[in-house]
Length: 208
Image: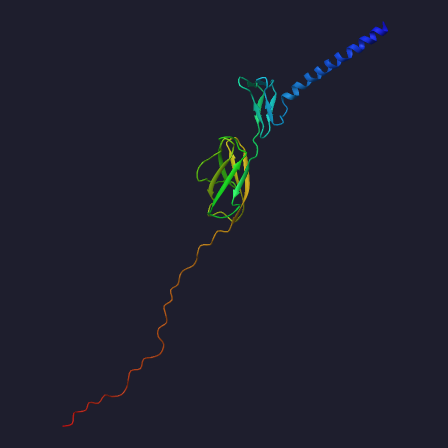
């Protein structure tokens, strides 16, 4: 009997390993429901289901993709969160005089999104309203306020989803306007004195 029992034990080992692995996998399902994804989540079966109290968090640049006919199911207490990311902003030129025009190029924004320009904490009005294209990029022109102080300033652009990009702009001193009053100086009068001839004029009668 002891030799038969030993053989049975050897046969049972693979089944025990498989059963242990299955139990461990089931134990990991709940934590994964609230874990942060690494970038992109694709529902190959057509459905993404978040259990009650679970979360699916997608970091900047990530996506949750559901094939046609699929759906994302989030019961009460659960949520799907897409965190806003950072975009890239390029300024041309990067050094400018107050009152001059600046070209701003942005990338890494949401697709077809309106964007707002700022200079430090003040709104900077572009020549035309900004809307990103299908690739999340835009190019805009704006005039730097003439009254802005010289030095370093921050230009930023934020789209409607919260994605923001910023860059540093160096503002040079504006050309100073002419100051003071114009003075007209009259030419000096001629110098010296005019002298009238002196003496007496004597009239003489003609000689007969």
